[in-house]
Image (cartoon, rainbow, N blue to C red; front, side):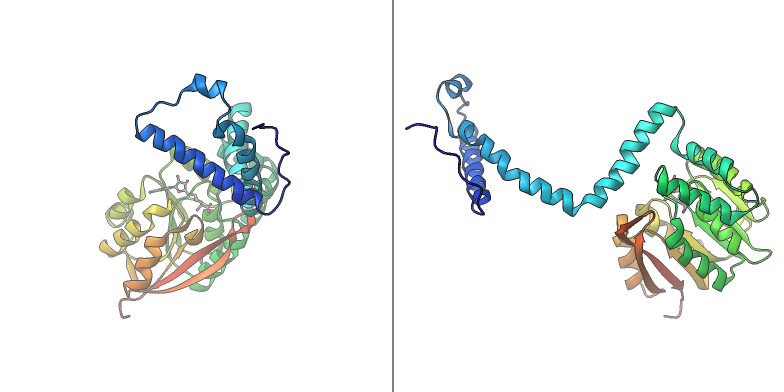
Length: 311
Ligand SMILES: C[S@@+](CC[C@H](N)C(=O)[O-])C[C@H]1O[C@@H](n2cnc3c(N)ncnc32)[C@H](O)[C@@H]1O
């Protein structure tokens, strides 16, 4: 029988037909390998086998699937493109790390001593040049409002990165308050230190601690003289949220009414952390639904917790 049959017309049944063909080819190959029969490549060359005949059809069947995936997850592809591909390319072309490139832009465009202008300049860079995982302007408003309302005297930030949220928190603090910000990556800490000082905050207001949170938290009392925390902003790696919250509890650093704001609890997400805070009975929990920094079509959220032993 001739293999030159007219090509099937595109129809709704085409995908089903192709899937069946793909399934039967895979099954034949799997059975052959299970029975220890090697697939004879030369024979395959001589006689047109099913797999050779259907390969264009398989490819066709996958096209709508791939297009659907691309459309459905286009914002995540864009995020990947901006965070990974553009970053790697620029790192290669400039020989300067992304955070340092951002700082150079901020330094040359922002007004020194004006924290809000420093933040706006960061936002301009992130919207128009390269993505940075700062808390960003939208979630920044939630953070700013909470700090302003709570007027905390002792604040801890986990994950300083380039110092964006540090500047945002510091500008909303009451007089005499102190912010401890913890960053484990030395290169990020160097950039953050320059950003914090550019915005006009001295070491009495903002203390940048270089180290991993699991090492810094147990030393906060003895080494840094912190007795209790009034406000904690968690924005480091999400897998450490639960561990570090429990460390803060163990070291008796939380008190009645301490506010803990945890970023990115929806994207990338911190399910174990959320499960714990909702079930342990020590926290009042509220989720602020919003979008990912600089990507308004990717859903994200912040968890606002209030520590209360009495619940
Ligand atoms: C999302 S960024 C923080 C963004 C910053 N809060 C802001 O809004 O500008 C996360 C940062 O946390 C730091 N980090 C991650 N795990 C950490 C840990 N266990 N201790 C200290 N820093 C950590 C990373 O190096 C990174 O710089």
